[in-house]
Length: 322
Image (tube, rainbow, N blue to C red; front, side, top):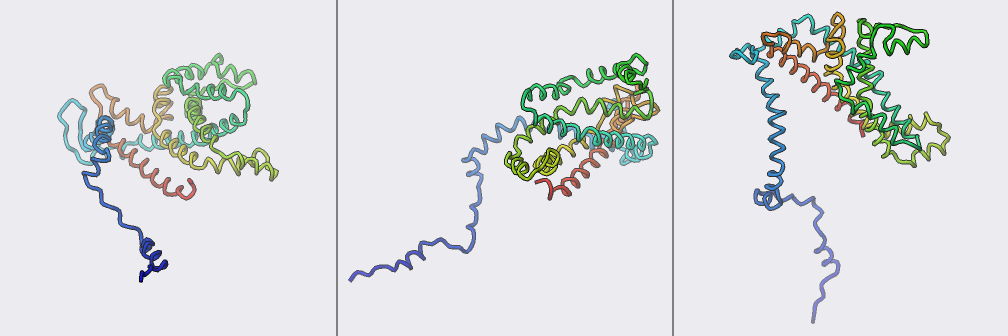
């Protein structure tokens, strides 16, 4: 007599165990080679070497120079933390930090919302959007030195200067612009915003494409106007991009150098002296050879502060960035 197996027993036997996930097999070097790991490493090796030589080697060299007294000509002398003490005791350090913070604050107040507003307005344009995008990005194409020299001509303090002539049409001015300590920094921020806003506008325009149209349609059904749609739909959808551009702008404005160097040279009366300009003065301010130890020490201090600020920023904004 033939005995038939129980269907229940067969089903139970064929059912996989639910005690937990099976342990993942450990990869061996042989598996890594078989999966193309060696060819991937060979392809990436030139990029890794270039990145190491031009990025990590200078960082390591700066760490060494920060504890040395050297002008890159004579034999370096180990001085320990003397360079950091010298920088912290420099009376110009407080002025440079205050000016840098003032520049960063003005750039955030005026330069951060302006590209977002321009991108939102351009996204509502139905015709010639490409032309407006090209015009917004055009200042980025202009070489920075050329842009600064052009604006320096515009900032001529005489009544016949370009900006003073325009202000005279409405009965204002003439203004000293770069020659006055109170107006020099806002003048620099105005040019810097004009020069850098185009790239941020393009980033926002690309992010706006990803905003779902049904959200706008639902807001219109609820009777929302333009400003309510921007506040309740557009800005929440751009939250991650806004956080990234904010920290990038903070880092960029903390390292401002070109505008104060070419516009005013740090003047008038050190009103536009920034941290990077102070680093430049340490390294190249003397014709007999600069104090490269102090310059690298201040550079590392700035990098450390920005790294800590970035870590805190990403930690705090993590719950809202997605």
